Length: 285
Image (cartoon, rainbow, N blue to C red):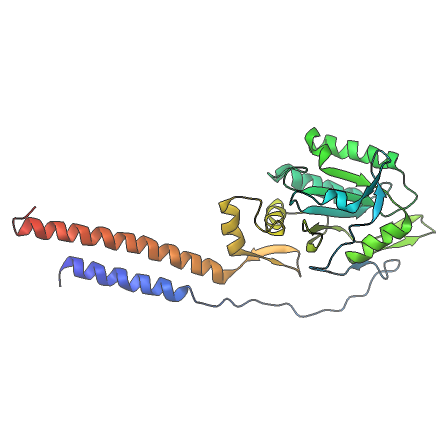
Protein backbone atom coordinates (compact mmCIF):
# COMPACT_ATOMS: atom_id res chain seq x y z
CA UNK A 1 0.00 0.00 0.00
CA UNK A 2 1.36 3.43 -0.94
CA UNK A 3 2.01 6.04 1.71
CA UNK A 4 -0.84 8.12 0.25
CA UNK A 5 -3.22 5.19 0.63
CA UNK A 6 -2.23 4.80 4.28
CA UNK A 7 -2.70 8.52 4.94
CA UNK A 8 -6.11 8.45 3.23
CA UNK A 9 -7.27 5.54 5.40
CA UNK A 10 -6.03 7.22 8.55
CA UNK A 11 -7.71 10.50 7.63
CA UNK A 12 -10.97 8.71 6.84
CA UNK A 13 -10.90 6.92 10.21
CA UNK A 14 -10.31 10.16 12.09
CA UNK A 15 -13.09 11.91 10.18
CA UNK A 16 -15.51 9.07 10.92
CA UNK A 17 -14.63 9.18 14.63
CA UNK A 18 -15.21 12.94 14.70
CA UNK A 19 -18.56 12.58 12.98
CA UNK A 20 -19.69 9.85 15.38
CA UNK A 21 -18.51 11.93 18.32
CA UNK A 22 -20.80 14.72 17.12
CA UNK A 23 -23.90 12.70 17.94
CA UNK A 24 -22.82 11.81 21.46
CA UNK A 25 -25.20 12.69 24.26
CA UNK A 26 -24.04 14.48 27.39
CA UNK A 27 -25.12 13.29 30.81
CA UNK A 28 -25.89 15.97 33.35
CA UNK A 29 -25.90 15.48 37.10
CA UNK A 30 -28.96 16.91 38.76
CA UNK A 31 -28.51 17.48 42.49
CA UNK A 32 -31.27 16.04 44.66
CA UNK A 33 -33.96 18.40 45.89
CA UNK A 34 -33.41 19.61 49.42
CA UNK A 35 -35.86 21.28 51.73
CA UNK A 36 -34.67 24.38 53.55
CA UNK A 37 -36.24 26.27 56.40
CA UNK A 38 -36.16 30.06 56.19
CA UNK A 39 -34.39 31.83 59.06
CA UNK A 40 -36.60 33.83 61.44
CA UNK A 41 -37.79 37.04 59.81
CA UNK A 42 -37.28 35.74 56.26
CA UNK A 43 -40.42 33.63 55.96
CA UNK A 44 -42.09 34.26 52.63
CA UNK A 45 -39.02 36.01 51.19
CA UNK A 46 -37.54 34.70 47.96
CA UNK A 47 -37.74 34.58 44.18
CA UNK A 48 -40.26 32.56 42.19
CA UNK A 49 -39.20 32.16 38.59
CA UNK A 50 -41.69 33.45 36.02
CA UNK A 51 -39.69 32.64 32.91
CA UNK A 52 -41.29 33.78 29.64
CA UNK A 53 -44.20 35.41 31.48
CA UNK A 54 -45.12 39.01 30.61
CA UNK A 55 -44.31 42.01 32.76
CA UNK A 56 -47.06 44.68 33.07
CA UNK A 57 -45.51 47.48 31.02
CA UNK A 58 -48.40 49.85 31.69
CA UNK A 59 -47.31 50.41 35.31
CA UNK A 60 -46.43 54.01 36.18
CA UNK A 61 -43.59 55.27 38.38
CA UNK A 62 -41.51 58.43 38.88
CA UNK A 63 -38.01 58.88 37.51
CA UNK A 64 -35.10 60.63 39.24
CA UNK A 65 -36.45 64.02 38.14
CA UNK A 66 -39.90 63.35 39.58
CA UNK A 67 -41.46 62.88 36.14
CA UNK A 68 -44.23 60.33 35.69
CA UNK A 69 -43.05 57.48 33.48
CA UNK A 70 -44.43 54.19 32.24
CA UNK A 71 -42.42 51.03 32.45
CA UNK A 72 -42.97 50.66 28.71
CA UNK A 73 -40.89 53.84 28.18
CA UNK A 74 -37.77 51.74 28.73
CA UNK A 75 -38.68 48.95 26.32
CA UNK A 76 -37.81 50.23 22.87
CA UNK A 77 -35.45 49.81 19.92
CA UNK A 78 -35.15 46.08 20.51
CA UNK A 79 -33.10 46.50 23.70
CA UNK A 80 -33.48 44.06 26.63
CA UNK A 81 -33.94 45.49 30.12
CA UNK A 82 -32.16 44.52 33.34
CA UNK A 83 -34.50 45.04 36.30
CA UNK A 84 -33.40 45.12 39.92
CA UNK A 85 -35.61 45.76 42.95
CA UNK A 86 -33.90 47.42 45.90
CA UNK A 87 -34.54 50.33 48.22
CA UNK A 88 -32.25 53.30 48.40
CA UNK A 89 -31.91 53.51 52.19
CA UNK A 90 -31.16 49.82 52.56
CA UNK A 91 -28.37 49.42 55.14
CA UNK A 92 -26.59 46.50 53.48
CA UNK A 93 -27.93 44.01 50.89
CA UNK A 94 -29.18 46.48 48.27
CA UNK A 95 -25.81 48.20 48.28
CA UNK A 96 -24.14 44.85 47.61
CA UNK A 97 -26.54 44.15 44.74
CA UNK A 98 -25.87 47.52 43.13
CA UNK A 99 -22.12 47.16 43.70
CA UNK A 100 -22.18 43.73 42.09
CA UNK A 101 -24.13 45.03 39.09
CA UNK A 102 -21.74 47.96 38.71
CA UNK A 103 -18.71 45.67 38.85
CA UNK A 104 -20.18 43.48 36.09
CA UNK A 105 -21.01 46.54 33.96
CA UNK A 106 -17.38 47.66 34.12
CA UNK A 107 -16.33 44.41 32.46
CA UNK A 108 -19.30 44.07 30.11
CA UNK A 109 -18.52 45.55 26.71
CA UNK A 110 -22.16 46.49 26.16
CA UNK A 111 -23.31 49.87 27.49
CA UNK A 112 -26.59 50.90 29.13
CA UNK A 113 -28.59 53.01 26.69
CA UNK A 114 -26.98 51.37 23.65
CA UNK A 115 -27.44 47.60 23.73
CA UNK A 116 -29.70 47.38 26.81
CA UNK A 117 -31.45 49.38 29.53
CA UNK A 118 -31.33 49.12 33.32
CA UNK A 119 -34.31 49.87 35.55
CA UNK A 120 -33.65 50.09 39.28
CA UNK A 121 -36.86 50.41 41.31
CA UNK A 122 -37.26 51.12 45.02
CA UNK A 123 -39.63 48.73 46.79
CA UNK A 124 -40.18 51.33 49.53
CA UNK A 125 -43.09 53.60 48.53
CA UNK A 126 -41.92 56.23 51.03
CA UNK A 127 -38.72 56.92 49.11
CA UNK A 128 -38.52 59.99 46.89
CA UNK A 129 -37.13 60.89 43.46
CA UNK A 130 -34.42 62.90 45.25
CA UNK A 131 -33.16 59.74 46.93
CA UNK A 132 -33.24 58.02 43.53
CA UNK A 133 -31.28 60.88 41.95
CA UNK A 134 -28.65 60.72 44.68
CA UNK A 135 -28.27 56.98 44.25
CA UNK A 136 -28.01 57.31 40.48
CA UNK A 137 -25.30 59.95 40.77
CA UNK A 138 -23.36 57.74 43.17
CA UNK A 139 -23.40 54.66 40.94
CA UNK A 140 -22.70 56.50 37.71
CA UNK A 141 -19.61 57.87 39.43
CA UNK A 142 -18.63 54.33 40.51
CA UNK A 143 -19.23 53.06 37.00
CA UNK A 144 -17.07 55.82 35.54
CA UNK A 145 -19.26 56.20 32.46
CA UNK A 146 -21.39 59.37 32.45
CA UNK A 147 -22.98 58.32 29.15
CA UNK A 148 -24.69 55.46 30.97
CA UNK A 149 -27.02 58.03 32.57
CA UNK A 150 -29.38 57.80 29.62
CA UNK A 151 -29.65 54.01 29.98
CA UNK A 152 -29.71 53.46 33.76
CA UNK A 153 -32.97 54.60 35.37
CA UNK A 154 -33.64 54.89 39.11
CA UNK A 155 -37.37 54.90 39.87
CA UNK A 156 -39.74 55.28 42.80
CA UNK A 157 -43.44 54.55 42.96
CA UNK A 158 -46.61 53.85 44.87
CA UNK A 159 -47.19 50.62 46.77
CA UNK A 160 -49.75 49.17 44.36
CA UNK A 161 -47.50 49.69 41.33
CA UNK A 162 -44.43 48.33 43.12
CA UNK A 163 -46.31 45.27 44.35
CA UNK A 164 -47.68 44.59 40.86
CA UNK A 165 -44.23 44.58 39.29
CA UNK A 166 -42.66 42.57 42.12
CA UNK A 167 -45.43 40.00 41.87
CA UNK A 168 -45.06 39.74 38.10
CA UNK A 169 -41.36 38.85 38.37
CA UNK A 170 -41.85 36.59 41.39
CA UNK A 171 -40.05 38.88 43.81
CA UNK A 172 -41.30 38.13 47.35
CA UNK A 173 -40.30 40.56 50.10
CA UNK A 174 -41.68 41.75 53.42
CA UNK A 175 -41.47 44.85 55.60
CA UNK A 176 -40.27 44.50 59.19
CA UNK A 177 -41.90 47.34 61.15
CA UNK A 178 -39.74 46.75 64.23
CA UNK A 179 -36.53 47.23 62.29
CA UNK A 180 -38.05 49.60 59.72
CA UNK A 181 -36.37 47.54 57.03
CA UNK A 182 -37.35 45.33 54.11
CA UNK A 183 -36.38 41.67 53.97
CA UNK A 184 -35.81 40.69 50.35
CA UNK A 185 -33.83 38.42 48.06
CA UNK A 186 -30.72 39.41 46.10
CA UNK A 187 -30.54 39.27 42.34
CA UNK A 188 -31.44 40.89 39.04
CA UNK A 189 -33.89 40.01 36.28
CA UNK A 190 -33.36 40.16 32.53
CA UNK A 191 -36.44 41.02 30.45
CA UNK A 192 -36.82 40.81 26.67
CA UNK A 193 -37.59 43.90 24.54
CA UNK A 194 -41.16 42.58 24.28
CA UNK A 195 -41.54 42.60 28.06
CA UNK A 196 -41.18 38.89 28.86
CA UNK A 197 -38.98 37.53 31.62
CA UNK A 198 -35.89 35.91 30.12
CA UNK A 199 -33.46 35.12 32.93
CA UNK A 200 -32.64 35.54 36.62
CA UNK A 201 -29.18 36.12 38.07
CA UNK A 202 -28.93 35.41 41.77
CA UNK A 203 -26.80 36.77 44.58
CA UNK A 204 -24.72 39.94 44.69
CA UNK A 205 -22.03 39.07 42.15
CA UNK A 206 -22.85 38.68 38.47
CA UNK A 207 -20.82 37.19 35.65
CA UNK A 208 -20.25 39.70 32.85
CA UNK A 209 -20.02 36.79 30.40
CA UNK A 210 -23.42 35.44 31.49
CA UNK A 211 -24.96 38.90 31.29
CA UNK A 212 -23.58 39.45 27.79
CA UNK A 213 -24.86 36.10 26.54
CA UNK A 214 -28.21 36.74 28.22
CA UNK A 215 -28.57 40.15 26.58
CA UNK A 216 -27.69 38.69 23.18
CA UNK A 217 -30.15 35.82 23.61
CA UNK A 218 -32.93 38.06 24.96
CA UNK A 219 -32.55 40.32 21.92
CA UNK A 220 -33.03 37.26 19.67
CA UNK A 221 -29.47 37.64 18.38
CA UNK A 222 -30.06 41.20 17.13
CA UNK A 223 -27.23 42.30 19.41
CA UNK A 224 -23.74 40.83 19.59
CA UNK A 225 -21.09 39.34 17.33
CA UNK A 226 -20.48 36.05 15.55
CA UNK A 227 -18.39 34.96 18.53
CA UNK A 228 -21.45 35.47 20.76
CA UNK A 229 -23.49 33.23 18.46
CA UNK A 230 -20.87 30.49 18.71
CA UNK A 231 -20.79 30.80 22.51
CA UNK A 232 -24.58 30.62 22.70
CA UNK A 233 -24.44 27.41 20.67
CA UNK A 234 -21.96 25.93 23.15
CA UNK A 235 -23.43 27.36 26.36
CA UNK A 236 -26.95 27.11 27.73
CA UNK A 237 -28.68 29.13 30.46
CA UNK A 238 -29.52 26.98 33.49
CA UNK A 239 -32.55 28.41 35.37
CA UNK A 240 -31.59 26.44 38.50
CA UNK A 241 -28.32 28.28 38.94
CA UNK A 242 -28.97 31.48 37.01
CA UNK A 243 -25.79 30.87 35.02
CA UNK A 244 -24.67 29.65 31.62
CA UNK A 245 -23.10 26.21 31.49
CA UNK A 246 -21.37 24.30 28.73
CA UNK A 247 -23.61 22.18 26.51
CA UNK A 248 -21.30 19.22 26.02
CA UNK A 249 -23.27 17.78 23.12
CA UNK A 250 -23.05 20.97 21.07
CA UNK A 251 -19.37 21.44 21.88
CA UNK A 252 -18.66 17.89 20.67
CA UNK A 253 -20.67 18.50 17.52
CA UNK A 254 -18.87 21.75 16.82
CA UNK A 255 -15.49 20.15 17.46
CA UNK A 256 -16.45 17.23 15.24
CA UNK A 257 -17.51 19.54 12.45
CA UNK A 258 -14.29 21.52 12.74
CA UNK A 259 -12.29 18.29 12.64
CA UNK A 260 -14.12 17.08 9.55
CA UNK A 261 -13.50 20.40 7.79
CA UNK A 262 -9.80 20.36 8.65
CA UNK A 263 -9.36 16.74 7.62
CA UNK A 264 -11.36 17.32 4.46
CA UNK A 265 -9.07 20.19 3.51
CA UNK A 266 -6.05 18.00 4.25
CA UNK A 267 -7.42 15.24 2.00
CA UNK A 268 -7.92 17.67 -0.86
CA UNK A 269 -4.30 18.77 -0.57
CA UNK A 270 -3.12 15.15 -0.40
CA UNK A 271 -5.05 14.22 -3.54
CA UNK A 272 -3.63 17.19 -5.39
CA UNK A 273 -0.08 16.33 -4.31
CA UNK A 274 -0.54 12.66 -5.27
CA UNK A 275 -1.87 13.60 -8.68
CA UNK A 276 1.04 15.97 -9.17
CA UNK A 277 3.58 13.30 -8.14
CA UNK A 278 2.00 10.76 -10.49
CA UNK A 279 2.22 13.25 -13.32
CA UNK A 280 5.93 13.74 -12.67
CA UNK A 281 6.49 9.96 -12.52
CA UNK A 282 4.96 9.43 -15.96
CA UNK A 283 6.81 12.36 -17.48
CA UNK A 284 3.72 14.59 -17.61
CA UNK A 285 3.51 18.05 -16.14
